[in-house]
Length: 373
Ligand code: CO8
Image (tube, rainbow, N blue to C red; front, side, top):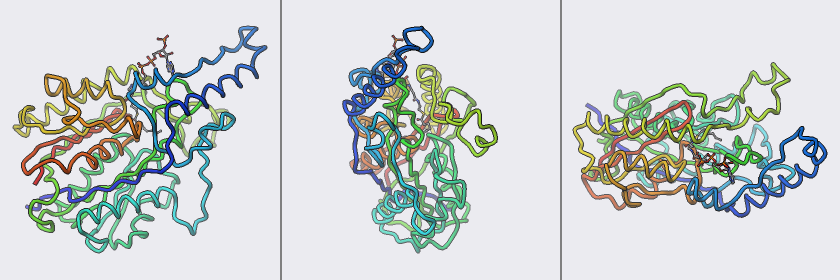
């Protein structure tokens, strides 16, 4: 039987960063402008005045300190509050393709492989920058891979669901090696005018190379012991942007065409589901929680991760056991748990066990148990 392993990972981090103070300053300028422009209506009680945001709240409620973004100026302009990412001609690589190629090259280099060793590319992320042709096929072409490619979207769990698809392709013999790549431009769908969520997201791209064990060096990478996927419908994280928007002009420009969430409900409902999914999976693999060396959790909220880790371990987890990258990256949707894995995997020794776990919109949860070879 063919066994699949993770032999390399890569990360593209946009160079521009926005810290909480900068973001809050721009937001509060927007609030002042809005309240001044609407002073009469506010005085008549027809419009509610907007409230300022605060860096202290953001860090305490989420653990986020800064985020990397594709474009900083557009987001920080209080009259715009949207990244400025110029359209490219059809002859140029798309922005997501550029990010993906960079992350994939690092994953290939880490594994000591070239494009000729790979048969498939899965672009798995929350938003595709166009309807078609598939971004994955563009990435396949840019890397020079002779094989097949497809896009998939399971929001925050896209990368872990993509991992399962890659494992399936490798283990059923339809591909020798598969790249799973997650170019997340979350700033493109974040409402920077919404006080409840303007601080949540950042941009990044991860790549994972999944290969046949027989094609790798002894001791290289991570065995995949099992994947466990779970979905349960919820409207608590929703974005109504889509190709039918133009068929009803009354909805164009409404805030529901961007990211909207009931953050507190998400926190309460998703945390126990995630802990249960991980615990059930470990039990089915006959792995005790005391054998777990590390959890690379989805990076949305620090308090949420600490709660989930506590529910799994039955005690507080150290940062070594559940590493945090959201302070630096904020929530990068499906890339988050893979960034944590990419940055915090090399110190594990042969036999160490860990779980990569994503959770978010859908709801969707993807859990992948791995063992250092
Ligand atoms: N500044 C100051 N005060 C604020 C701010 C702010 N910016 N925002 C809210 N407040 C105030 C509120 O008004 C409220 O005041 P009061 O108590 O007087 O009513 C108080 O702070 C508390 O507000 P909340 O209850 O909203 O605050 P929480 O403690 O719940 O924290 C969080 C809000 C941080 C959003 C938190 O609920 C959270 O992180 N929840 C989990 C969310 C989560 O995991 N979501 C998953 C995200 S989805 C995903 O990962 C991928 C989706 C697909 C990607 C899409 C790409 C764009």
